[in-house]
Structures are given as C-alpha cells and as structure tokens.
Amino acid sequence: MRQIALSKSARDFLSALDAKQFRQVVLRVFDLMTEAKPQDSKQLIGYAYRRVDVGEYRIIYDSDAQSVRIVVIGKRNDDDVYRTLKRM
Image (cartoon, rainbow, N blue to C red; front, side, top):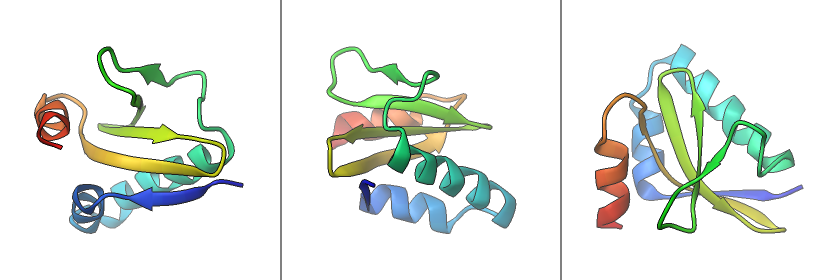
C-alpha cells in the first residue's frame, strides 16, 4: 500500500472544510492509496500530475510505487486550483 504525502496547501485546505466535505475528500485520498490511477482520473496537460474529482472538489496529485503526493485540493468549478499549481 502506498503512503500519502500532503502539501501544506492541501493540509490547509482540508483543515478548513466542514466535516461532511472533509470526510468525502479524505475517503477519496485513501482510495488513491490502493488505486493511484482510477478510471475517472485524468492526466493534466503540461504537468506530471493527475486530477480526480470528488463532489465539488478537485484533487491534484502524482504517484509512484511507494507514495501518493497530494499537491493541491480545491474547488472544482473555479480555476484557483490551477493558479495554485502554477505557483508551486
């Protein structure tokens, strides 16, 4: 099973979520531990990252055989996730 590494940005975003949304996002992150490239994930063009959606949130991540690194978590319907990713 892979290990999870959260960026500071992802930790900060998770800590600000309500309990219901927190649970949804964290369950999806745990799913990535067993299946790093689920069928509904997509490769980001121009980046070495993938994205997956959960409810109204988007998770940007990369993975290898030992770990899944969560880079950014944010609202799905605005481009703030991608602006944050460009700054990293």
